Amino acid sequence: SNATPLQFQIEVHNGTKSTSTNSTWIGNLSANDLRFGTNNTTYMTLLSNGRLGVETTSPGGYMEVNGSVSQTIDAAGLGYGALTKSQTTFTIGPLASIVVSIKSANSMLVSAGSYITTSDRRLKTNSRYR
Image (cartoon, rainbow, N blue to C red):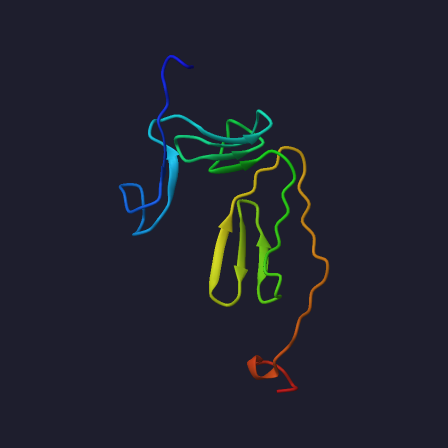
């Protein structure tokens, strides 16, 4: 409400919320939501507990999107993905692995357009072609 003014800050120097010299920090100085929008409509909300909502003002997870989301994992073709019952783990390349939590209210589509596999006989132990 207008009775209690909010404090908002844009900081472009090394202050208490910056991570290093010449960093930029934008945010509220109080425990209120930070909302982004256009045409008097909120499209993205950052709650005071750190949860981010896109097309929702009350995200239930750390990031919640109310709508369609498209994500390309490993477009270079160097990794693999595995979908399990409790979580999705994508391994990109030989060393990096991230865990992605998926929540779907209605449906979820997982697909692969194409894939290529190769075989290296130097790595095989029980092969007559070794």
